[in-house]
Image (cartoon, rainbow, N blue to C red):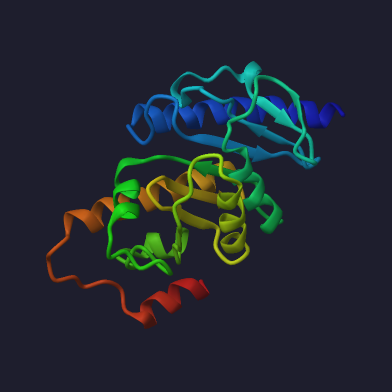
Length: 213
């Protein structure tokens, strides 16, 4: 029990630090975006509903037990189901980051986006940290159908892009999820900057070599 409490205390501070970093760099605004971490006993620490990632209080983070029941802290984000869908389908996932970051959302709105893989392999780090990025069809916030749509993709993909909404990214650790989300946003920005220009993305052979690594 002491070890779990010590782990939870450290994770609370980590979530707040990552949230502030994302907010301060303009990757989230207002009360949008949410972060969760799965503890060693299967419980989840999660950012509360209607909370700014730039001003989180470690003591007020939401704690959910391994069955998803809210047991402590403020009421969890209303998008908690997105996180739980990723954890259920990805046993190795240790954290999930969901943002409404500007460039990723912009790409999710493009009419010609490939729903099986939204962004081209522009850089090696995108391939290694994100890989294939499917587009999940639009559903209104809180719609249970959105949870099912995310769950259908989560088993094969640790990152998905919600149409007209934003990315949901799982990682083995909080830093892994953070860095992958940032790489996704940066690649979305590059994709928009290069619109209308002739591109030289990585070749299929180059992508396969990176994925094997």
